[in-house]
Length: 111
Image (cartoon, rainbow, N blue to C red; front, side):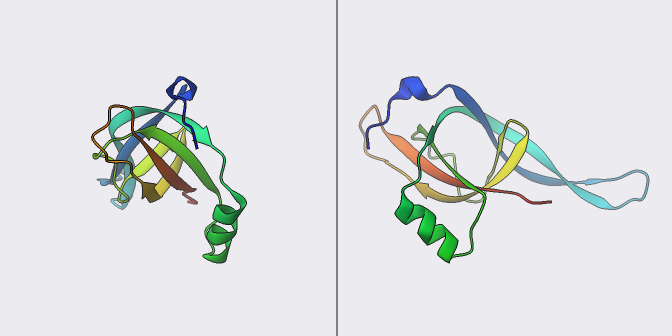
């Protein structure tokens, strides 16, 4: 699968949740805290990938490509156009080559 970095025309914010105390009712509310942003491009999931995710009861997923970045982990949250996604899988290309890419499978967070 050839990846063209010129197709990376959208931004994704990566970060995690931090509990913030609501001053009205003193309850803790998780709030997304951005750590960094990266350019990305959408990728097409194969039928095999879609069937595997459905078999594991994983729905509402997206597949994106970013330049290889070891800072991105499966414990992070990604925000695209105001929608939050869990990083559920990273297919990392950690060769020492200059043009390496990671494929990230993201699942929409349902609140």
